[in-house]
Length: 317
Image (tube, one colour):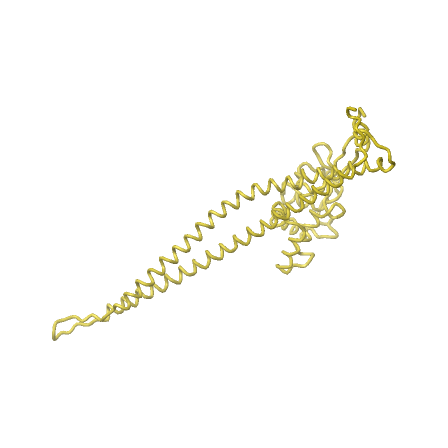
């Protein structure tokens, strides 16, 4: 039969796509939970370092005071001119106190050095893990999601044919997919180099062109993006993470990090995200001129955006 095998059961494509998406979602959630645990562990170690540093300072002060008391005791003796003898009081309890506090200071210093040693070792392990986790997250966000999206598109095309009850062949399937190629939005937000975005037709030229959101508010928003949101997203954070962060910080929707996440990483149906058409090595703007104006003004190198690419049909089909 060669490549003329009949294709009637195409639901497996949709099932495989759903499985891939579920795998990517659960894996990203695992990365997010791991990052939360890393944060808790790091904060705990930092708290322990602060605690033992305070204990060191207190032990040193107490030892210093004990030494002064011992010196005072030793200096309190007197000279008897009649007998020609010098009388020195019993300072043994002061000496014992100095020795006790000296041992206490040594023990506290050892605890601080032990915690600091583990903090350095764990931080190195965290940095190595984050490098691997970032690469894995990129695969989940790009390759796996693209594969799932492609399977869904293929399923939609094939379903329209199998609905008639007529089988189509592998060769016919290839032709159908090629013939229906068009502009397709990539499933995940991409970091796009700003110097490759065509702003020649932008209508934003000064602060006066900012209406809904002021230029200063947009500057603050982009700073939040660069300093907090983008690094967190690269480590697997999602909308729920930023909602929880806003609640912890007491931030409302307008000033919160969740709002920044939505306008840069929101769903494809969210009209607030920056949207670009990829044309060769450059990008044409569909939405987001104001943010791009401010991003360029701040000297940012990349910006998160949703990308639409044109998939051309095969001219030989």
